[in-house]
Amino acid sequence: MNAVWIAAALLTAGFVGWPVTALVFRLARTIDDKADAAAAGRDAADDPSADVTVDGPATAGSPTATDSPAAGDRANTVNGDITVDAGNAAAPEPGGGAAATRILRGGAIIGVLERLAVCLAILAGQPVAIAYVVAIKGLGRFAELKETPVAAERFIIGTLASMLWAAGVAAFTKVVLLG
Image 1: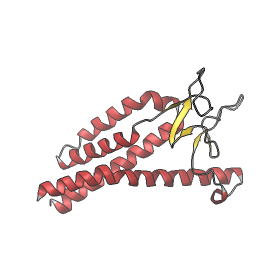
Image 2: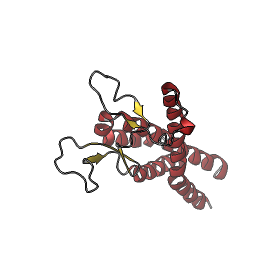
Image 3: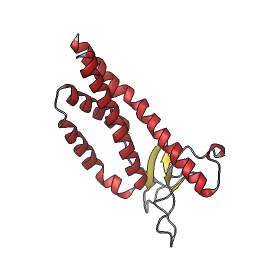
Image 4: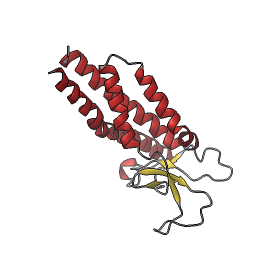
């Protein structure tokens, strides 16, 4: 019976964690957008473009242009993925826009694997293995995170939400179900 509980915990941690993490992203976006709207004197509930937060374009003489998100700027997203300008790319995309490079690709798959690893580490009594997961994930994304503040924020929010979910599922399973 323990094997069934462990399998159920791994499936719950790995695959139910995605909607939980997406909910946390939506909550964080709502909080950021309300703060941005209040600072700009707008009502976030009336702003249809407040569903996405991306880096705003840098302007000369504005040192904080890349640090403050622009809620209405959707130029930095492609199908919900954060993108950055490809620089001096000569060939435009087929849609007619400038070429863009997607960043934080594979996040959903990495998230599932991360939650499975965290849950398995706790169930196996090896919580120190979580440090390896965090280190590998951080080192693998370092270059992208260093260049894009929005990506770094999403990375931190997603990692914490994902790991807390997996640790909670594993702890519940270990204490209550496997007792």
